Length: 68
Image (cartoon, rainbow, N blue to C red; front, side, top):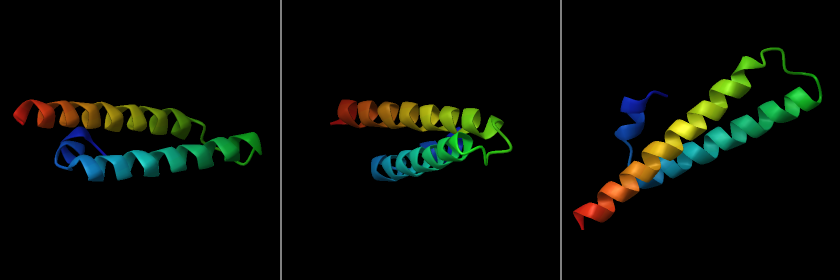
């Protein structure tokens, strides 16, 4: 999911997205531990997607706090 799609979501939607990404990353880590993971680059991409979603979530929370 790219940044424009993430910026269109509200705080609750972003929190759900972060949780889903964390679950996916956990599953990939377990696959790597059991040597079932063939494409290890997906670990890096999910980790970066989590960081991207968390950053936009923090920006959204700050923006909402400034608007009140």
